[in-house]
Image (cartoon, rainbow, N blue to C red; front, side):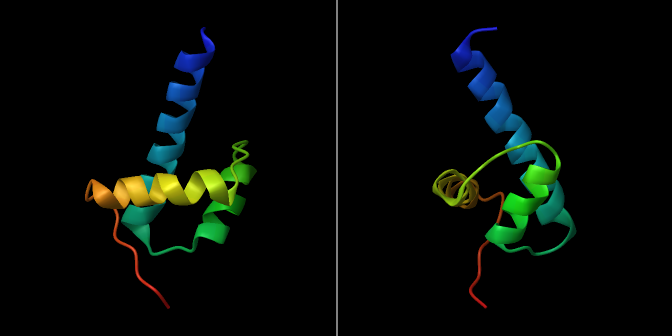
Length: 66
């Protein structure tokens, strides 16, 4: 599988994992990084937060400050 296709699939799986948890309960980004790592996804804040902002921009998730 080409690197581009692998990255596309990988990011899609991460998005699905995030949406799964977002549908169940609110979460913090730091918790999500730990959750993803438990499932073998190594993702840092420089990748996670833009991904979350993109999901929010498309209306899939909503953010709030606490």
